[in-house]
Image 1: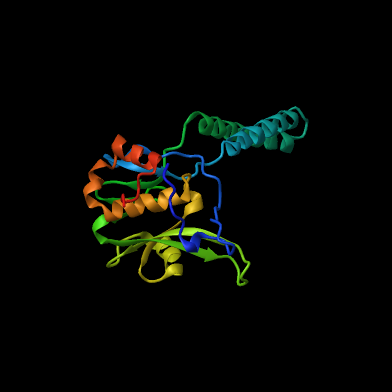
Image 2: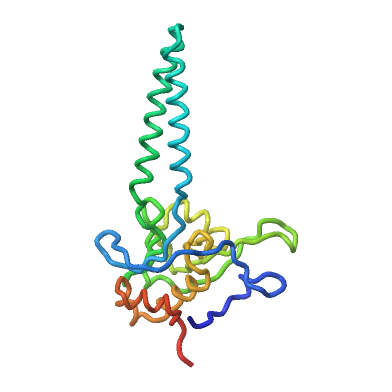
Length: 227
């Protein structure tokens, strides 16, 4: 993969790139609302939570059996309630383990960008996007305070992005329509940035979004103009 430049705002004071987390995902195609697009996946929820649900359910079911065998009426009633709760937790945990979550993340289609993890999904058409801007949010006042890398979508007009996203984006200026913490996307942050910049600057290439050609381009890092 070709080396992709890192913007200054995403660098530490010593000049090295700041990476919030280690990405382990890969770009792929996905169908959203009947439309194919290129998915830069977000980080999925851990399977640990499902195992915890099953474990707690088993403990409650065991405690229920102990209470039901007692002589006290209140203990029997409590045991039945705990037993039902335990069964529900076990069922929820097993369901979560069996069913894979729907893939979510940044979805690039020929028409625009969608933030599919939000409900309802936020969509911004390409024609109103004027800039893909790397941003950073400092988590403190000191010069050594940690920062988080964000990706800003600057748009003309006021696209409907919902109240939640509007509040996040307002931290970075009135022209930023969306702001996404890049650490929540399970793809290398420079690949995310340059993928969005490439398709923003090359409308003729957007027809390949949702096809294998786009996935291959991202995986090979062919996201810069040949000089």
